[in-house]
Image (cartoon, rainbow, N blue to C red; front, top):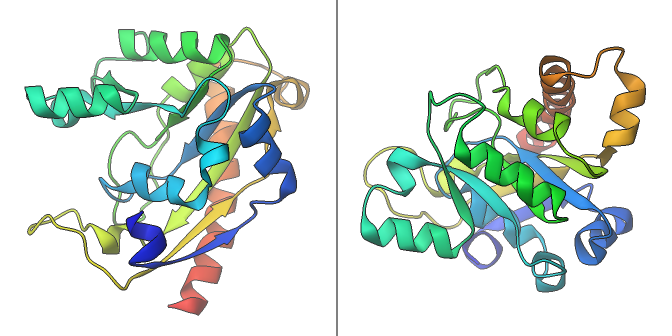
Length: 219
């Protein structure tokens, strides 16, 4: 993959526990990460090996912007084949794409989401969308929620013309500790879409501090 061979990637937090979660898939998995580039999804999973990517129930399902990723026949075919699900921006949290991802969680699959809801290449604070809260709230099975923060992907494919990959860039992927929905229910006084979204957002921004602190030192 581009991030693995043409660029350098430092990986943190991917301990034996997390590797086994990805490989064995004893529970549904919900991975959550920041969104800095249109290449985030393929670049990010270069940090896992094939046994972790293509374990039980296959690779991840992921939400993708309908107006960008499904705008013509070629892109629709490409993203459908890569298990991307159209999400309509401004379509609310009860739209078919979110329903589909909830169904995949409940059948034991791995789902990935970008809760910022858009590319945020300036690394600004962005309020997370409630869709992630709904996915977790309506799961009927126990989930391993895995927060991930990455740095530098926007330098490989900047969100501006010309749109082609750059090489020789440094990147970083930081895996946070997995959070089970059972643990989440015990920690939250009220278990609803808003409180769940806020909790995941706080976990992500704490992870961001760790990741950016390291990344600033190596670049």
